[in-house]
Length: 75
Image 1 (tube, one colour):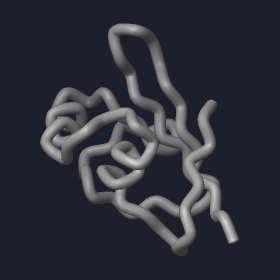
Image 2 (cartoon, helix red, strand yellow; image 1 turned 90 degrees about the horizontal axis):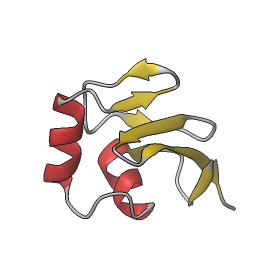
Image 3 (cartoon, rainbow, N blue to C red; image 1 turned 135 degrees about the vertical axis):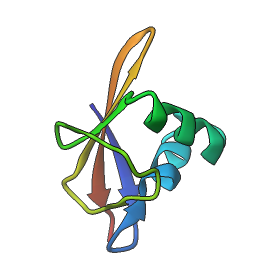
Image 4 (spheres, rainbow, N blue to C red; image 1 turned 45 degrees about the vertical axis):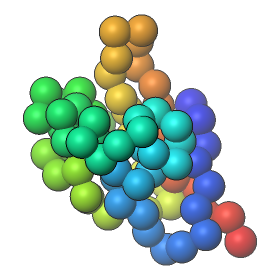
């Protein structure tokens, strides 16, 4: 699991994945959501701009296996 630190109360899913270095564009996130390759807290995510909060976990399924990111608030 990789912690992704944010300084705000929430972050959009597409922004989180870009911040984590998992994708480089929002279009990539859109394609991944359409293919149901992204889970948030164990449920398939259908909105690329879903608001995430500290404690939320995002699982990205790739050909290399799953990558898990956890949102962490940094003061």
